[in-house]
Image 1: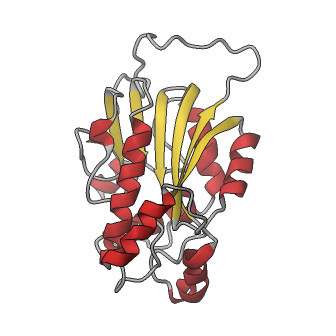
Image 2: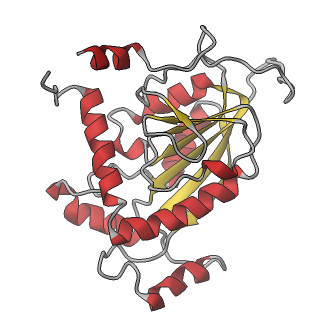
Image 3: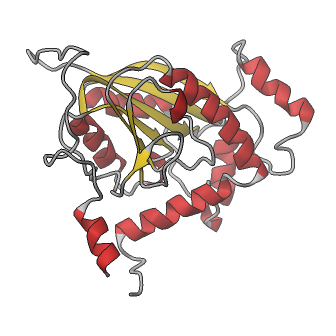
Length: 259
């Protein structure tokens, strides 16, 4: 059966594949190392029963360091001790109030409707659950490169880079508190210069608050408890992610397989 490339889901799958391909380039690989380091550090502070990573583009997985017992990847293949299933970021195939942590690695930049993705995150997270958002910085050299090369439809410059300030505002409107926002990767957006040894000193200087615009950022936010909603104890019984007690592909995934 021929693919319908005009369908939003098919376009999303193609975009994810293109982004994963870019991460195999020298610049993408160097950025991956920095992003995985930041993700692993943040995951080490988070607890719970269920974690979902939405379409991670990396070759390696940071999930093996997580203390969360059940780790899921959507829609990529299993990695780092994580299971996988199919779905879309704007319509997650999990029950409401069921996830403790969600990871969105450059998901919002390539989503047709990023607000819908964040609303899904809000729906699926338990009170005081966390979302980790990796985003490209629209300012500095990487933002300039997007303006120069985005029209050529080249990854990763085709995405709509979202500033930290705007993302904080969106999350606040949904009832999230921003816990931290860490700059990631300070090298210029050049494939040829990606692994030049002298430029790697920029990443080390950044740890001492070097005022140079980063390529990306990692934002950690916590879902606020609204009104008189009681806090769930951290020892609460495990909940299934779907009403039937199993995590499984969405109905649309089944229909694609049958066709």
